[in-house]
Figure: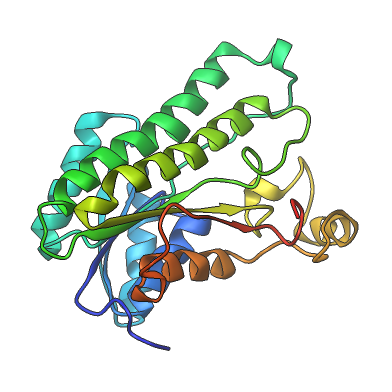
Length: 254
């Protein structure tokens, strides 16, 4: 294991479980001080405990990414804890689906917009405000989805629309802020080994059978595989990568 992020601070939203927890653990394993952010303190504390068990450094900060005051406070507390904000990963998101456009509940639509789109925008604004005042700038990775800009399926139009917006917002922000020394990119996962990719009543074993025929790769991606892509984009290895949208979906949208 390398230590590409020794001396750096990484902020990860939605870090209480799934992809976000895997990203937080991966940054810590490569030397970063990690701020694990989310809405549920218990799950964030578990992420921090896992990092500290392996000898890493982390802090938990509760925040609702759809609230501008929470997001600004999150960045401020990150800097207070560790002195800088070198990497930010806007991972927090929600999924609502199961209905065609004509039947999409307005409440679901507004929740998707508030968290998946406005949450990313507010994160970018607060993170960029800090990073552009730092001599070394910083790197931001937004978690989008292969559903959106890359592929579509019936019944999840609201989610698709918001994730397409994240992909577009990432590229626009990347062009706006590379002159500030801030690299902004996205990762777009397909089905991943989390509860989000399970159908109602489905077990992990059931999903494995289904994915053998549903994906060219024949399986879901692991959370660690998605985390590896995020760390690459945030690292000096990707120093010339700006405004990319890296799809990790086992060939589903190829």
